Length: 159
Figure 1 (cartoon, one colour):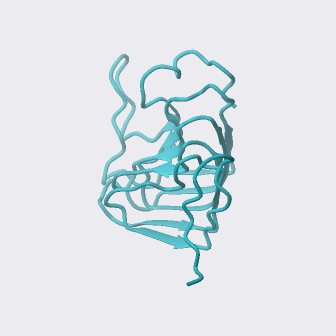
Figure 2 (cartoon, rainbow, N blue to C red):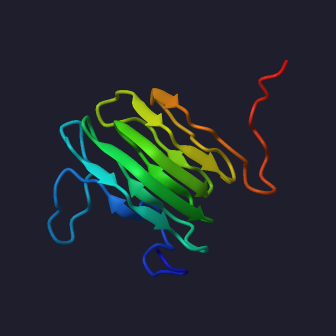
C-alpha cells in the first residue's frame, strides 16, 4: 500500500511501485526499461493499493519480452493515473479497480501482441485500456461499470 501524500510520487510522471528493468542501474542513473531481450520476468499473488492523492505514475511498468507474466493480482488504483503502463507478453487474473485508466500502453518491447485473460476492469474515469500499436488478445475480460460521473463509453451489442 502506498499511503496518502507519499513523498516522491506527487510530482512528475514515471513514478512506479514496481518497474521491470533490463538491469540494475548504477547509483543515481535512470532506470532503463526491460527490452525485447528481457525474458522470464514474472510477478504473482501480489495486490497493490494507492490511497487517494497519489495522482502521478502507476503501480507498475511491465515493458518486457516473452516468457513474462503478471498473474493473480488486484490493483486498487483510487484517484491515481493507472494500474500498469507499457505492458508486455501476458497477464491473467489481473483485476483493476478505479484510476483514470486501467492499463496505458504504447507497444510491447518486441512489438508483439499482448494477451490478457480472466481479468476485469471497473471504475476507470476515462478508459480501461488506451493503447497504440499493441495487438491485444482479450479472453474473458469484462469491462464493468465506469466511475460514477464518468462518461459511459461502453457500446451496446443491441442494434
